[in-house]
Length: 208
Image (cartoon, rainbow, N blue to C red):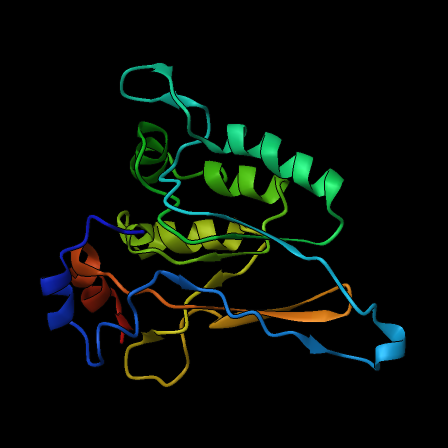
């Protein structure tokens, strides 16, 4: 995830050990039963589905060559719907780098940002539970980012992104989902912001 980042440069911008934020998304499974054993089955099967580095890909094509390719949310949607039919308890999460990377998202971010973000439109229809904020979410600036965030019907998560000079995280740091009587915690952190550090400094958001 976010393999295009320069780890040496990233380390210069961290206050803590780079190991702490070596993953874009850390999903912590907390099997905490809310009620007594008599109300919860002895065994619960929960299926976790995850996507990452979608980079604005919706259709299963290479946007630059206009040729079919094994990618895109439209292709993934078929698999997600099939799993949901087979498994009643599903958690669907995304690890970020979502709203940048194709001509579709570039046009939307730079030329006509009025319609709903295309990726949020599709992800809403697939009932995502959460999305980690990746470094490429910042590529078009905070105004475009916050608009896309407001259009999502699921929370954008980052446990280590703060408004400048404040103790409160800019995004929700985690969520806890109750699935079949089991509490599932999803905790995320953004770890690589080399290409957006100037945007963060100018617009008042910082990553630790």
